[in-house]
Length: 315
Image (cartoon, rainbow, N blue to C red; front, side, top):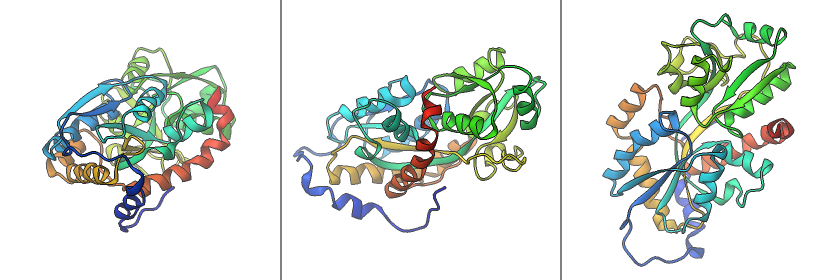
């Protein structure tokens, strides 16, 4: 897991790229900022983006939200990769999605091709069942997999939660099927409808469904504020890999350093806005400001786990 400190990373990384970028003479920003969202409306990706959006507007950008769903984010990342490098297209991404893409799929990009702007959520996932499920603990889930073919839902193939599901299954030697959904909203619907046995998503979205769900454990290194009473899986005695997800803004490769600086400043200002912080916490998500070089380091740290479970992720 990445350990962050208070060093300032932004200025140096931008200066290195300033000389090779295309020149734009017009003032910036002077047109709409297209903000790509790769999961379905109602989930944490969508909600956190919409909470932050007014702060970006306040910084001088007129934001146009665009859904580019499917492929665990590959459709949106491909669109971002192919966009004009003028600083007018960004994406809400979730690590380690891009790392998974470059190792498992025939995509035109690598995770380090993109320019990370700022991150705002770093947390683990929960495993959950519907409120009246006979599965009450993570141990119950393990026991149930020995009796029958249990089904486990993810919020997208190739994402951080999928990575934990396959790593956990391999590490504990369990037998269960995996069903993929585009985001937490359809996954929760499937749980509540009895179509899958167990699901998983971020702590924030889980807290918003707490009246309908029962939680079995968290995948991170520590408990999450949004679900403070839910123990980690490791706390419960299971030696499984720690997987956490990072929500962050990405932009197109080759954006000029001066425009990247403007985008970075806009996001940093929005993420420090008291109203935005309060709204995020009210939705169950707690902000952690992650700078561009810290995001790149997290990609490197997650890559080892992706490579280790590459074959499982293909299934």
